Length: 138
Length: 138
DNA sequence: ACAAAACCTACCAACTAAGTAGGGTAATTT
DNA sequence: AAATTACCCTACTTAGTTGGTAGGTTTTGT
Image (cartoon, rainbow over all chains, first blue to last red):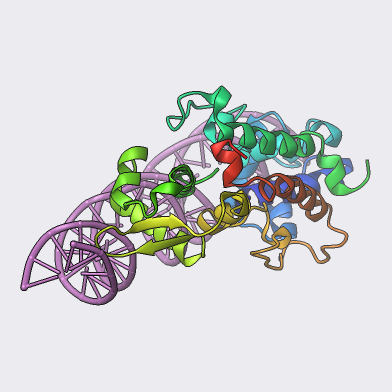
């Protein structure tokens, strides 16, 4: 299941996408609009900034804003950043790969093969859906 | 990600499927073979029993055994039982549904629609893959 | 009766989630 | 210079989950 952090990130991103014309938007404005704890949202926005999705500006008139087009921000990227691996097993993860101690050989492990299928099916969606699809005007 | 509990369940089930001719198998035998803590495995097998997947017999010569054919035990069933919801959001879950407070209308929520797609793609695999596929002789 | 085995209850340590609270620093505008 | 705002940090809470461990009870075959 997606964590609240991840959900909040999507909420914040959609808000920013829908208000791109405004320029920088205050943390407080997003928090109030989406009813998210200000301090918690602060961390989330910071993570999104460090990941190169958001930009920020300090001082009066400051705030956060998208530095990418909504069509360029995939759901996969946001989920990996805030939620962690998309795959169901570490030995099947593309971005968080870890050798699995359970089977001696990944190439012949049925579980591994099936989990790869699940991963690929999931990725085929979330790698191709973007913020633009979430705000519904692509 | 799948929990260890879930992985252990699959390990135990494949062991039981591969040794169906033996009749009842001791917890200890499975635990030793798959290198799982005896007591932890005990809980898992009990859950599988309560779910109607395994049967058990007490006393000497007792142990656990499959009461369904491997082809009848879907991965989805095992995952839901030990791991929880397969869907990424409660409002998209078939077996653990909960109304989501985030959007006013599920029918028009883009997030909801996309997460439904992810769920359906995932289910199309794990509802159709069974224990028989895991032991690799279907 | 005895031993073997599942069954059941309880507990525990470590970790994570989802915050809350508070403060201080740095950059920017007015 | 003052106000505003993001940035960064520590610490705490509350609740739940994970991955166990310990020990006693019940059933059953011999």
